[in-house]
Length: 190
Image (cartoon, rainbow, N blue to C red):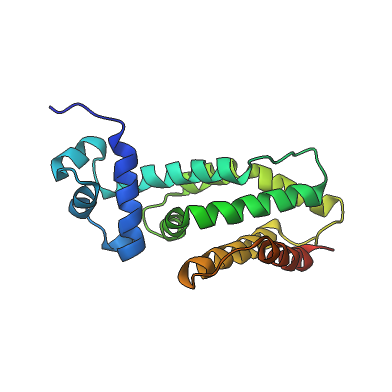
């Protein structure tokens, strides 16, 4: 039996992300992932029992990586708007630089592969953002509507910017960042 080489897992994940971007989750097979990762199909099965275990593992890795990127330099004790801007910019920059991960997360979250327990575990990772939004409502700085919808508005704004940059080859300048942040801020502030 072949020994596991943990350096292969990131290689497999990168191959999977590339294929998902090209074909969607439904369009990939274990054979295609192995070919893209430049490993034998049998070797792939040493690391993942099936497509579902591969996708769940990749989703968990992407969610963990996203959270660490989203909350970089965020001070929960700082002023609300400063914290909101820090997280907003972090999410935007992360989604632009990890675009394939963003596309995968979007597809996986609406796929039959995700279980409720996985959704709840991921939700917990992003508690600091929900807590910040609640604080903004408690301090009457942002609209007092369901946080789900405030976060939907915020992430929808960010996701569309990232997509426009990638699909239309737009350059994100500091001025465009500021303009888009202000549009988002204007949409949620009280």
